[in-house]
Image 1: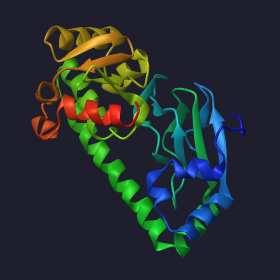
Image 2 (image 1 turned 180 degrees about the vertical axis):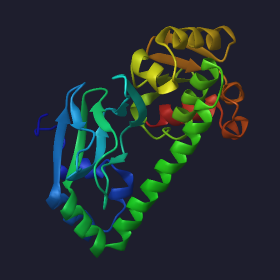
Image 3 (image 1 turned 135 degrees about the vertical axis):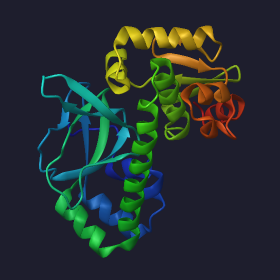
Length: 258
């Protein structure tokens, strides 16, 4: 872990839209207690059972939440991307470990000082509550994905979640000649853990979706989505595809310079 960073505290906080919209007084208080830390891929951010003396936001990179099963296997239970909050406010030990899935930069606050600000500023307290509600929504969506019996359906659900719940994470999306491209933010072994499948099964699922014209494999970590509607149907969640098209998502990605 390194404390030096390309972002200063003020710059880092400005990259988090919800915090950037807070009143100047609150942002000034947050700046005084903010520390920027960098974690190399594979480094632990917090361990299982940590009392979590810090809370923070992901500024850049990907963090994975994982639990160790009784037989020693590690199971990825979720991802944290730019703008996501981590750490347990007003709570005890962490039930899972958090590890950098890629080189990552985070903005951290000493928990007691952050909690003191929550008590002083209702706007900040509301922001944390909204984060928890968003996290709960993601967990519910993920339960639906994992209930899909076929691996290709689970993979489609994962890609659909990237297009919906994570659509504001700029570096994951791009526009290639009007096609929406998605960079898979974790490696195949981690993705297999996340989907409850074997890596070879995930690879077959990618190729099956490609053979059916739902996506195009550009690289092992990069795909182009041909039909959001078909992706949603494959995931068993057609309503999540309502109002979304490859064209509009690709235009949004291109318009943001991605």
